[in-house]
Image (cartoon, rainbow over all chains, first blue to last red; front, side):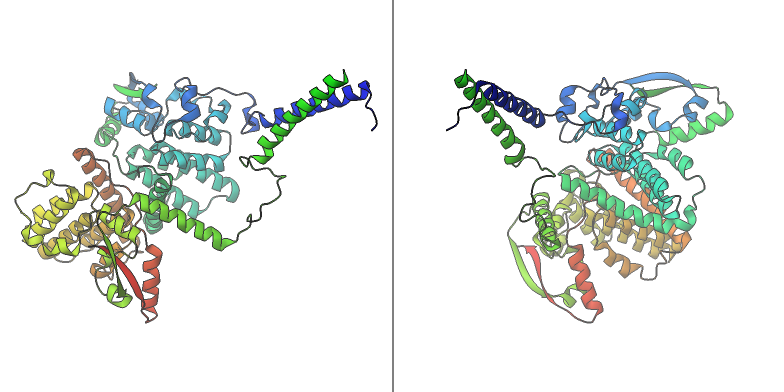
Length: 274
Length: 277
């Protein structure tokens, strides 16, 4: 039997050491970033703890840490922004919190948000932020999937954002079409059925000249099917089935719009999440 | 020195082996380089069977049945000639009927014994549904519809359907036929379908056989009413402080569609119908 020299033995030992370290490193390798745009990442919002990102909750939200703040604004300022983020009473803001509406702070800087810790979260709030971040980065397909998942977890806001992401994906890939418009209109109607009448602002923004009278039949067909899917999705996930939960103050908003026509500089107290 | 090199090499080889096992041998992770397992391409039929089993498992946990189940062989043409809403073609469908408070034959037969002075607030949704039906049968339409609507907000889809039909008939008797009355009933039945009952179609075919659903004016009205009625259901649930009823698809849609296709072709089959003893 040939004898192995000490030099060759050392070389063999070193080679095996290198191979073993490479193999161990491979096994415990770190997860890859979700997108190349993640290179300059922001961490998960301060309202979210690491424990929550890791496990989340089976069905629920980390929103207990989100506060409601009363601020004074002019009527024109209230109506010039996205009304979905504004409550006219404390109860309305509580409804927003219950249905996964993010704070203004959370919606800024989504393009640099590190989405990796948010993957697979079973927390409606975190899943909503995950989907919104993907949409901001241009991944509309991924965003729609994540946001509809967040809807099953209880976030009405996620359903609205999922509808927009899906619509933008269709526009990007296939260009404008009446079918895409029908689908978006049906999805936004569903958000209204789930309770959020402020979704009208999205209809005005994305479908300002939609011929609802001629297309109502198709919209209703889509609504019935999409609502059924929402129920099936919840069943498959073993979650409570979402149903209509009207947002408070529908009439107060109508009055506010009328008041704004007369005196847009008038000031009111509103309630926001922070 | 050689002994140390040998021991070091053996130790590291062991580590390499453990790492290789964790990565490739434990079965926890898939790798693109892994050879395909023998059943990697099992064919569509296997996936369909797996999906059927998955749904069956979901249904059995979502719709548990209380009571002893019996099945009876029935001809499909006989089945389709009557109101199919309380008929189950599978145990899962029977469980769904129970969950949404569809009354049994025995309960309907005993409606005369229901105390009409009872307050529905003290009753569970099933008993409230029976109270509402009993009030309708005694001719107290207003109270019957109100009780049925509250039972609907607490999850009774059957109560929702019966309230819609009763309201339609009351309006018909008082004001005569109208397009608006038809729109309202069609929208209520659409809500029942959205809540899950594909058999609500039976009521649409019975009461509104000539409804022009594709007419833009009818479609617009129906769409608006449908959204409105769903929101009203949510508001009612809020006021009763119960979770709002949401879409919960009734199992068996494809089975029922097959039976109707058979009937359209002038044929019939014998099927099992499930009920609780």
